[in-house]
Length: 111
Length: 118
Image 1 (tube, helix red, strand yellow):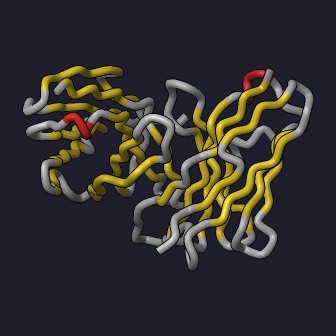
Image 2 (cartoon, each protein chain N blue to C red):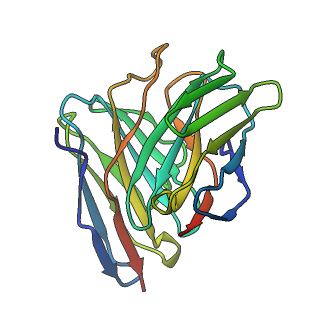
């Protein structure tokens, strides 16, 4: 399976703290994306990083990619209660644009 | 812009019954995906369409699952007969990006159809 794995499975932090979650994957990729899923809802795209990029920022989000280690990390700075959700990384195969999702990190931000 | 529409939102059936889910992607999106998300897990790709053709159905349990996108727009996913382990949320997503294209883009997801098999 090409599915990645997120670490940790669950994370609980206080509002204002930073949250870091990691993703490891198995095969070569074109790009890696991060998605958020609120309870009972669909997934929402957060950020995309291409295989030739090492770091990308978007608002309070910072994503890094290390293709030699086949891993990525998502940092959410100054977390808010509204950031409470599950976060998934998704990788696409070299061809076909199939997207494979990881197992997810459940983030709880305590007000 | 209207998002990806899915129905029904919830469905409860007995095992061995059949069920169908419908998806209407964002207008103009050529690529459509069906994912299965079991509680506590990440979405698992079942099938990918580009227009009305299948790009990848390698993880679709074809003995009981079928999907079609006859006119290259709406899609239906059917399960017959359902098993207890089919209880999950079935997510539909669409994308502007074509299979095999050198560029890539994001997926837009619907709210999902939650299936409970008793």
